Every structure is written in C-alpha cells, then in structure tokens.
Length: 257
Image 1 (cartoon, rainbow, N blue to C red):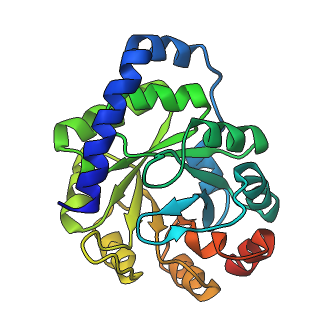
Image 2: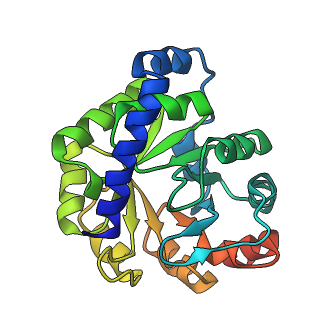
C-alpha cells in the first residue's frame, strides 16, 4: 500500500466516527447558516501569479516543519507579505492539522482559506463551509470518476471553489472530463516522492485553455516562480519552502519577486 492508501483508509475510519457525532444532515444545516467566505479563484486571478501559502505542521516525508508552530502567526505573516490565499492542512494523524488550527487561521486573516484535506465524503464539503473555507481540495488519485463528479458538483452548490489536484496525464484527462476549471498540478511523484516542475509544464499542455492552473510542490526559488509565470501558470501553492525559513514575510517576498 502507498502512503495515500494508508491515509485514505484512516480517513474513512475518522469520518465514520465524526459523522456519528455530527451527522451529515446536521452539518448541512450548519453550513447554510454560515456566511460565505471570500472568492478563492477571484483572489488568485487578481494578480499575474497568485500565491497560496500553506500552513502545515508536518508531513509524512519531511517530519516537523517549523518550531515553534503558531498557525495564526504564520497565516498573518503570509497575508502581510502579500499571499492571495492560505492553505491549511486538516488531517491530524499525518500532518498535524485539525479544526482548531483551521479556525485559528481563518480568524487571523481576511484572504481566502483552502480546506486542504483528503476529501472523500460530502460531510467534508459541509464541514469546510462551517469552518469558513473558500475552497476545498479534491485529489483525483483519491476518488473514482463518480465520486469526483459528485463532490465537484456539491462543492459548487455549497458555494465553494474546488481545487482538483492531478499528478499525471490520466488524472488530467479525468479532470478535463469532469469540467473542472481550477486544477492543481502536483509536481511530486506519489511513488518516489521526487519533485520536478516539468510535471507542471507537461500537464499544462493537456489542460483547458481557460482553466486556472495551480502548480504545487517543489517550488523553492524566485527562478521557479519566473519559469511558472512565463509558462502561463495562474498560481502556486507553496508550503515547505516557506515554512523552513526563519522570516516568513521575507521568504514570501524573495520568492515572489
């Protein structure tokens, strides 16, 4: 089994427990009573190359990323430095995230916040709305075509943007077939964990011309940003490359020159 398989197996167990405490119907009612959050795609399109800066305590491959770890302070630093949106990890077991962390970030900033989770159930769509998310992450590798289409449609109905993440040409084909207009290209190989920007450049050729493409993983330098901007990529999602720097504001400004 891959690390993604392990995460998804644990996620189904976690969701069964959470749905028993707060059924989907109750979560849906709470969601519709919640205010709508700022427009995610519009924020990214407002600049030549948008930055989604990530709040993440740790990852399975890299371990702890920042000590001390203060989600609200990190998010405020990103926003002050000019990030168009914040990504906040939700998974607790593998990434050290969770509801309290997301709520702290949401309360600290005015920019849109991405609910970055392994979304496999409609409960999570409504949960994202309740927490004040502007967008949810959907991972093509984690969903079959029926589930993917259902969650894309449901996110739209709920007033959320859906960032559909792909890793290869077959997943990009599925994204195009689904009608997704906000597509994340993950530069990390799920089998080897190596990253290369060439993944973005190759898969861009298969994407709809009017889609908003987000390059994810392995983005570390201002030169990387220049290459992506020149290629017509709409936004980047950066986490580890920023979180390991002592001065977050300076790190964002150096990256996005």
